[in-house]
Image (cartoon, rainbow, N blue to C red):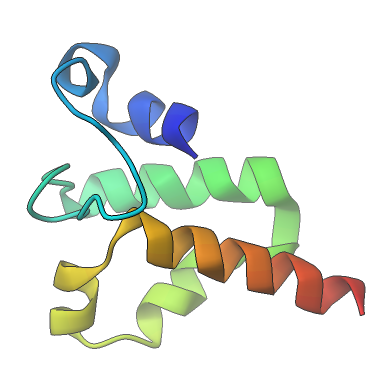
Length: 86
């Protein structure tokens, strides 16, 4: 996940960051909406249709999106991928 995030935010910006499960997309990474689009495309390329990041975001309200952490996304990917395999 860290490599995908570095690709989205840029290696120079990521140098000063310790990206872990508690990292916030808003406060720590300061992702803009266009960067969420890029992340969505990278997740689609990596995981295929098994992980529909755009639909998952659409199910949240603005406050949930603002408060979202890397750990929440990792859990969503893990659950989304395992649900498709059942």
